[in-house]
Length: 235
Image (cartoon, rainbow, N blue to C red; front, side, top):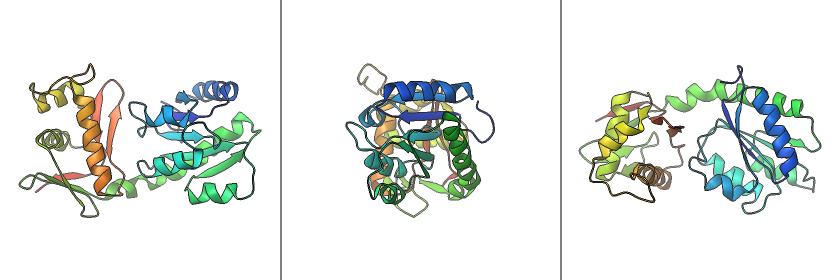
């Protein structure tokens, strides 16, 4: 785990391979688990693209444009977003602000400046986290629906409902993958070489995202399981 006010995990998205690898190593020395992506598409198609504790993003990316990537991240996570880019054309700062990134650093930049910026942003993120997670979600068992804090209703399949019961019972703790597989039942067909759990989680995420702009509190814990990181009750 990283030092106080530094995230535990970080996604670094930059197509400058030399810069990215050296920066990643510098951040790892500070105790941060860093995954490097050289293309925006590589991040959004990763197993758990929205579960990182922080994002450092370049603007001039192949595949998914940096601004589009930031906007996508903002719809799915409250994690800090730092832009580090050599793009200096007129209007770029306004674009970054409009996309709701937290800070912009222009290349060339010293690695320690990046660390200081991450620390400042993380302080803001951690300070606002209780307010973010305060709003409650409700599981309406009779209607087989999940009710978001904004009262949007997400229709749940039997598999969704079974998983939500697991999260409700866990009371905010991580639910191991094996426990979730047992909740789903042994009649779930294998999908893409797995037992179907990843696909089931993906479908649940998508149902929630389509119904409400609220950040989906469903998060993964690598090689352990999943947790519902918000107050959850049943009616």
